[in-house]
Length: 431
Image (cartoon, rainbow, N blue to C red):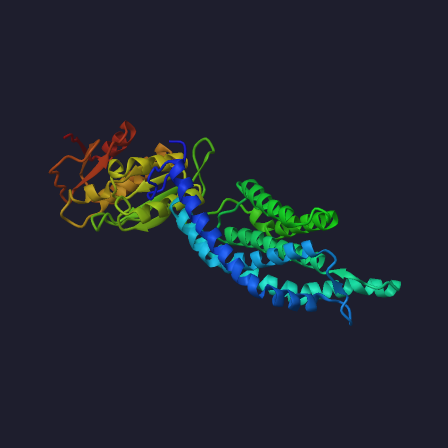
């Protein structure tokens, strides 16, 4: 087991994934080409409106000095509009392709980010063209007036700079939204901040350098510094956040000072597993049938991964009934698994006494010491009317516990000695 596998993974070959990706990309590219052709019909009117907004002079001072550059800028503008309008279809294709490999929290964050990014992209584009760039060009033109110079501006160059600035704003907003959403979803913390920084900054700067004209090194340097600085400022808290804690978990220390996080998986097992209270410090998540429901299995993997769970204690699920790949995924995440076997223990008693269930929970070790587990069990037995304890590795078939009897699985000699000191009879059972 070298990686994490979700319940939806079908062990497909890399080539099949590449074929699927190629097919989805091809459909998106074809749609972008079609929409680019449609936008090219009215692109002249759109660019004329934009240039009128960008023109800083009272009498127009925008000219075309290079027809070939203007033609390239014209088609680039049409292509960008085609890309923006094709974005909803591209988002559905991206989600369909990525969904099988994403955990539930990652899926939600991905969908929220795509929708937010599409809205922000259009909003920032309108703001940049309608408000920010006209102000910027007018501000720059005022220096020419003060110097007594007559401004003559290249339309293609103005549009290329405008596209670069608008593209930079979109990329910065995309990176900012990734950091914000991931931080709120508790996907980013100080332990994995380097991983997130490398990918967010790397992708953002790569796409930024790709679109900025090579003959504008000043703009490249300025936007690089500003973009990286803004993203770091927005992610200041998220990049330095402590390891997230959820579902009532607390950091537990073992006898050697090691930190553990224990999660109680309270599965109803289709109504066969009763409910009991977990130990202090254990987190709790509830399911109806985690061993049979793939969505619940993925949710549990999500919880284990996000909150760095080191041990999961199942209420009634038998470990050997869980899919082998699923248990391998838990081990890959550094999470050991055990079970209380509450569903099996509960059928050994016809009355409503839950002493056996509480003893099963009390007899939990790691990270708790054996001494503390013995103390919990002895206290429970002392406070009850139990006179006989049945012990063994597995509860025997047909065992019917009476009101004065109880069951403990795999006790140590120390626990047995303490029970016998209470004057309680201990009977060994085997199948």
